[in-house]
Image 1 (cartoon, rainbow, N blue to C red):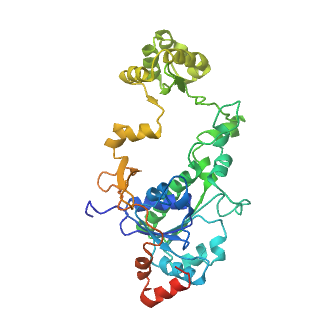
Image 2 (cartoon, helix red, strand yellow):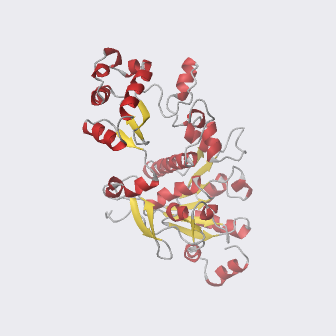
Image 3 (cartoon, helix red, strand yellow):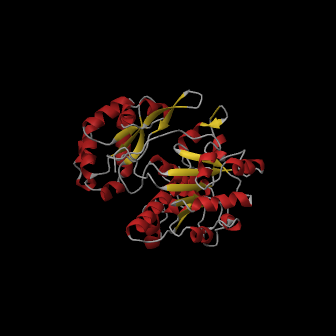
Length: 399
């Protein structure tokens, strides 16, 4: 394959649903060359089109998350619209949806219906609680999934209510697992001669899956991990510390060698050479002393002084980045993570770069999020609908 051909070229993905979890799944396919056909309600489109900061009535977020996708406006509440979906599925490799469980079955578009049409289809279903179990019918958003998955309880300070991270992490984690599941299923289909299969992703499970040793510690010792602010209990030292100029610095000195270098850099050779602190378990028992020593030192220096001193001795250290810091950072730019683009009216905008980086066939932005229904005619031509038939569908409000 020529290196200018994207790695998922030839894979066709149908997207049903809206907002984040399902559409972010397909956005990753689109960034690496898949033909993603996004089906949206006529006249309204994906609600994400009007979320957060708008430019001429359209969300800036939309232009990034929907890059490289084709948009078809199709009324799934009409039998004609659902018939079109079934025809498109015949030509698809993957279908991604994030409706509440049972919604597609009510429309005759469930897994049994679609796999009967195309036995090679991989169907990714992203929902709050999964397609089975006693909670399957509950509405599920990322904030609820983060709470049920254990993340919210351990986030924040012990004397305050649990807090959320500043993004919809439950959605994006579920999306990543959806992509992994789809690619694994495609691999099985192509290499092992298998058929398509269903990939069932629950938001709460995607959160739970990254909770490290949370469950094991409870099941073995009855230990419940609590909120700990900016520190990471059981791993020492790893915390956020105040600087003289009112800013904060994050320091990770939790490997044995790094700890010694850190202590010497802050003038505490006594702690560096203390045999009781040579390993993590010993440091955990004296974390208040260690954190106090680090904070005392950082408080006497500016953020830049702290960064310079610790970087010189190879101690992991970093400032807490704002959007402005990210936008101006030379490393982000050197890695292609600030990607210049243009909005439909020609105004410049920067998109997040594509992750991960592939050496031979990296993903790329071919176009930003399309206008609602911009590709309806071209997509319907795939299944032989055009001319008077297409106009009749428009007149009936199907497209």
